[in-house]
Image 1 (cartoon, one colour):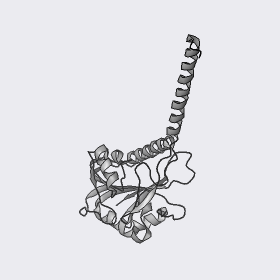
Image 2 (cartoon, helix red, strand yellow):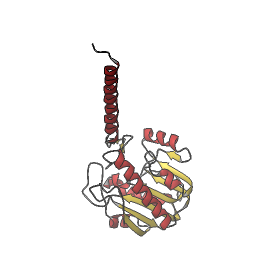
Image 3 (cartoon, one colour):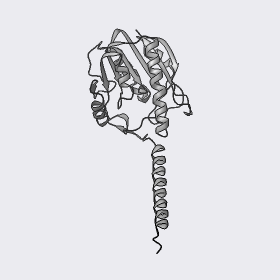
Image 4 (tube, rainbow, N blue to C red):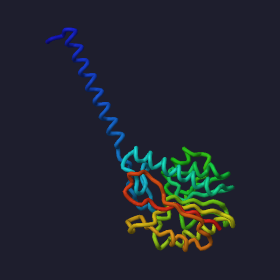
Length: 235
């Protein structure tokens, strides 16, 4: 066996290079790891596993891009229409993807999320937000409790049999001068847990509100479909 210094150095270098190759390959696998987008029906509502959401991105780089584009647009809309609130409510807040950004424009922000596992994670991450396990069409809040209500890709997952009752519940908990900001799918065919509805249908459903404006939802450029509309309603 050749154990000369030159041979040992070559062996050590080969081992080191193989180790570096293994580290690089692992990093590549992690960077392309798919986000868990699996949905399930639970106790008569549709929910997701932590790590994903309906129509989720293929990998973490796309998720980062989605987050950038969505939050940028959300902030722009809030700024453009000078939206602020004493008491705000986000329905279907999930693990708080957009919750703190809404909460920055409210003195007292509430997040409603029926998935207890997800909600517990949100409570730890954002203790400044009040979290409850309510769900539409039954919210445990008094009439005219909020001057801002937000749904972000939530109403699209409410089946036709419950959508009008759910919207009327939103109207019940909003004040006389409230703003309702929704971001929902508006085109395409219904799926197993998604029911796209046109802007016009939402305009008719929110009978107590006036549709101020709507904008195409902005997501990552690689998203292959229309991503929905952001709609701003005001009493």
